[in-house]
Length: 103
Image (cartoon, rainbow, N blue to C red; front, side, top):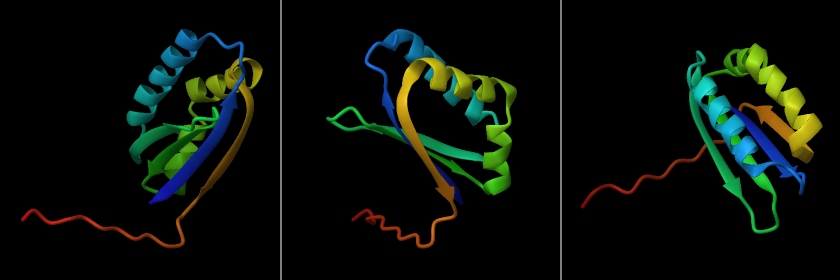
């Protein structure tokens, strides 16, 4: 498992529907990529958003980074959508899992 965590704050003046459409298109495109496992996004009350994508390995995540449409959207994000962002990636050093069994 390889995780990419994308923390961001959007500009106050963005076109919300355009951003949502672009985000949906990128999610659908990511799902088609070899090694894609999952994608989730979470929004905090203070406006910060955290998006987590899970890949089978680093090569798959780097492959996604190089997809032409995704690279163009990264540029658009810097120019139009984001006020700031940070990205963290890597193999988790520890993974714990709990699942309640049906009674």
